[in-house]
Amino acid sequence: MSLPRVPQFQVFAELVPWADRGQENNLFSSRDTLTGFRRPLPSAQAHNATREVHVSGAAEVSASPDRAQVAVRISSTKEAAAEAKKSVCRRLDYISQSLQQQGLQAENVTVTKDFRRVENAYHMEAEVCIIFTEFGKMQNICNFLVEKLDSSVVINQPQFYHTPGSIENLRRQACLVAVENARCKAQEVCNLVGQTLGKPLLIKEEETKEWEGQIDDHQSSGLHSSLTVQQKIKSATIHASSKVFINFEVKGKEKKKKHL
Image (tube, rainbow, N blue to C red; front, side, top):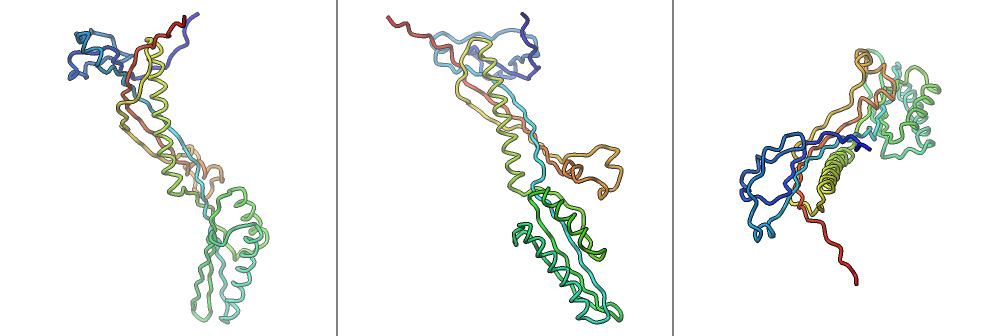
C-alpha cells in the first residue's frame, strides 16, 4: 500500500551533531538533494551536543466585522422655529423608544442636533448613530423604521468595522496557528526518522500580513451602496497571515525497560 501524498514543505533538518556548527547555511531541505554529510563529532562530544530540527510554519486566519454603525437623519424646515423643533423631536422620540423596545443599550446610541436659520425659515436636523453587535437585529430595526417613518427620515447604509481588540486577537491567532503547524511538521519529521521531538530552542515570527476581503470584480464595479449586507460583510472581513521559524531539540527514542 502506497503512503499518502505529503504536501511539499520547506523543512530544514539537522539530526546528526556536526563538527562545524558555523556552516548552517549548508543544511538540506526536503525538496533538495542531499549532497553530503559533514564530519561528525567525536563520541564524547556528540553525546553532549544538541541535535535539532529546523522547521517553518505558516497560517492564515480571517474574521468578519464585529460591529456595524447605522446613521439615521431627521430634518424639518418650517417658518416657525417651534414647529421645526417639534417636528424633529416627535420623530426622534419615536426612534429612541423603538430602539429601547428592541433592547439596545443607551451607550450604543448617540444623538446630535443642529438648528439653524435658512433664508426666511428655520431648519432643524438631528442624527442618530446606532452601534450594532447583532446584524440580524440591525436589519430588523432598519426595516421597521423605513416602514413607520416618512421620507424626511433618511436611514443610511450600515458601515461595518472591527474593534481594536478583535484585530489584535486575529493577529495572535494567526501566530499561534502557525506555531502549531510548525510543531506538527517537526513531530512528523521526528516520527519518520525514529526520533523524539524535544523542547523548542528558538521561535521566530518572520512575516506577518493583513488585508481586507475583496468582493468579486463584477460586484466591485458597481456602487458600494448597491451591495447587499452579506457582500458588505465579506468586503469588510479582515485576513491575517503569519510565518514562523522554529528550532526544536531532537532526542533519541527512549528504550523501554524490561521488567523481570
